[in-house]
Amino acid sequence: MNCDGCGAEHAEGAATCASCGRSLLPPPPGSPGPDPIDGLARDVKAAAKELIVASAKLSKSLAHHAAKAAEDPKGTTKKVAKKVATDLEKAGQEIERALRDL
Image (cartoon, rainbow, N blue to C red; front, side):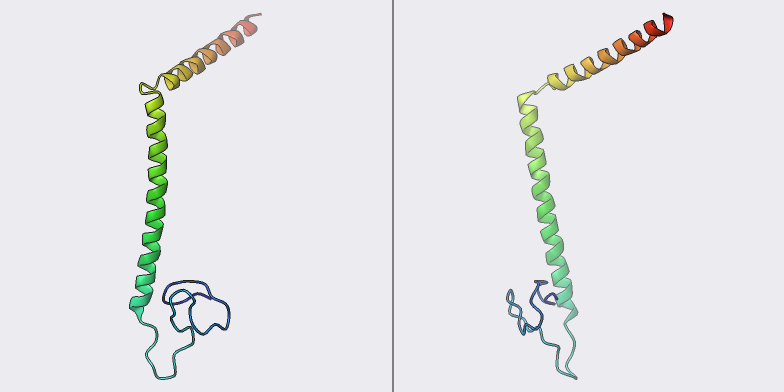
């Protein structure tokens, strides 16, 4: 079960959340239920955390690509690899044509 306040998991039967200290016991009869703002705040915190993680992944990816571009600023390696692949494809087609003509 999770805390309604912070979303942390807790053991069954726990009276308070070990993370935020909120009571995990059901409210007494006649008292108002959980504040909907708490749920909204928890959702916003979760979304913010996901955004931070996604931003960190994007930053890492951009740094990787920037480092690769710095190593080969004109993209020469990629261009040469593409040219070799094209030449191999053409050679393969010529070999197939020659074999058909036999």
